[in-house]
Length: 277
Image (tube, rainbow, N blue to C red; front, side, top):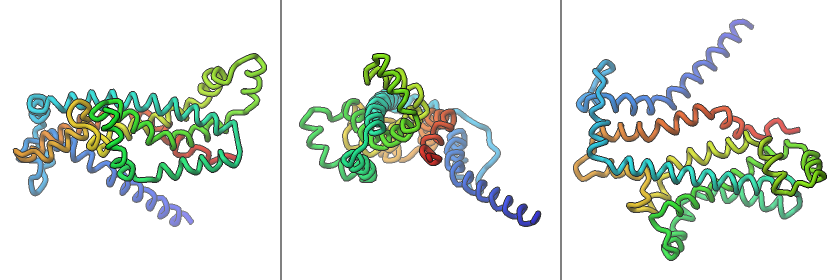
């Protein structure tokens, strides 16, 4: 039995190591390569010992100032989409949590089905509508699209969290004269804050890294960081891999640190409702 447990533990450790290697190696490769001299990035055999340099980051600042403008655009769009998605998902989740019926059940299933539709399916039909409204190449169109794309998942998550909050709290607050909005704002939301943070994590990661909507609906004014990185790959002067890896690292670090910091809320969102009943 001891040998069997040892083999099982060894197998689990090997599986975890393989997953970490698969997930972290590309990130480490990009970050380390951004610090290598250009001639060492794709050296064969790979050079593990080298003198770090910030040359690529300095060149990124000098040659690709538009990248940092795009980072600011990404930040504004991400914050706007996150706030809008949280407000909409919280309100909708409360309604679904406190009301039941055939139509509510059918509509929540519809929300899940809509979330499964590939973004490209709705992107092209939306383009002439966005163009007619004069929203092309604006921050607003991406904020609306990103928030809308995640409201369905956010609603399901918030409903799951709010289902765990006793309805007696609503009734007690209502007896004290609180309105529905007051109950939601002062009673439900504080107790469902882990769900709010879980929704925020999902929306922030998606909005910060999204490429398709930004590619279709923006050109210059609202261009985001992933779009500028794609332009680096298609540069007519050829790809400067050092600058490209430096830009990728700068774009990656903020959201990576955010996800690590908010990891427990992300896990809570993924496991919401798993122990219900």
